[in-house]
Image 1 (cartoon, one colour):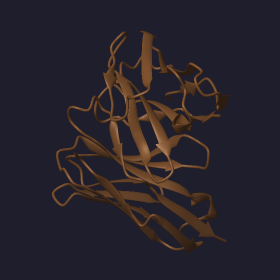
Image 2: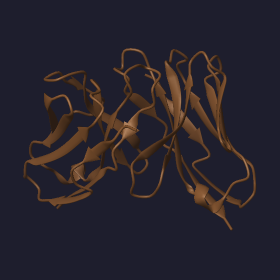
Image 3: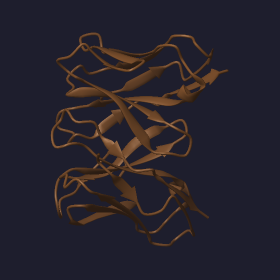
Length: 113
Length: 113
């Protein structure tokens, strides 16, 4: 079974800090995604990656960047954290083709004070 | 841009009832539609995936249908149990999205003993 591991379940940071959220998958999948989930807004795509060192912007990339140096690891970076980035962050990876379900990590609840 | 809508936003039923959750989408050009379950503070668990060429999928007490031409899907839960209480999300997987999912805002289900 696919395992997607997010490094932190809960994280509290201060405004202006640089924040790193880490995600690791164990299935050698090429595609990985970062979403954020907010009440009333649902899940929205921040960034995704097709392969090592490749990245694409999603629907709400502003204020974020990503890094994919190894296939199994996809990092989300908040360059200068702001209070409006307080949210639940979810990492996911799909199967090897378009008809495989997407597998999610347990999420990181990030609070920016 | 594809819009995914779930109705109702919240639902409360007594244990044992059969129930239907609805999902609609505006663009029928999809690879597949996926139903997920999310428990409070947790990540998403895949329940069912319906490929665009399929009409329905079943897993245990769950049955999901897809009518691509009308842009609708339903999730049928038979003989509901208190353990079914969770938020249910539907999402469509579209071409040219790198397998990223476009989510509805979910239906929050409470099954009372």
